[in-house]
Length: 111
Ligand SMILES: [Zn+2]
Image 1 (cartoon, rainbow, N blue to C red):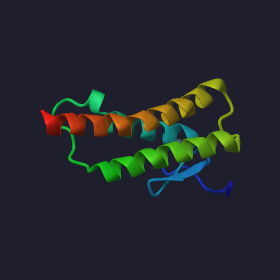
Image 2 (tube, helix red, strand yellow):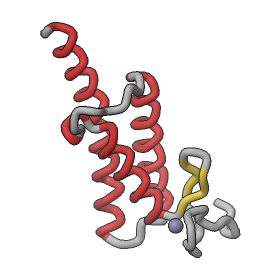
Image 3 (cartoon, rainbow, N blue to C red):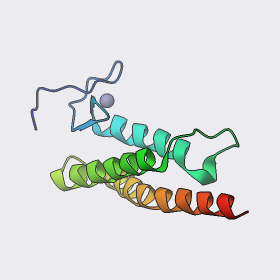
């Protein structure tokens, strides 16, 4: 990892630990970004007017999330338990959001 790369989030001076969704992000902003987007696509969290993203895009986003979260955890950038816990949380969440979405769609088609 190139240590000179900075997080691309506004006003953030932290070093980037990953390249995610076309942006260099520090660990905190990666976590934030994942939480925001997972929240948005999680069928349990939707309030009716959910987006019309297709399952393929959703799946690749979730896969990217878990892949990066795993990569960061293995790279040793997550130094404290809170950060490690959040990465694990993202891994698990990304792993369950796609099956949930597929299940909801299947139900919607039947009923
Ligand atoms: Zn940052």
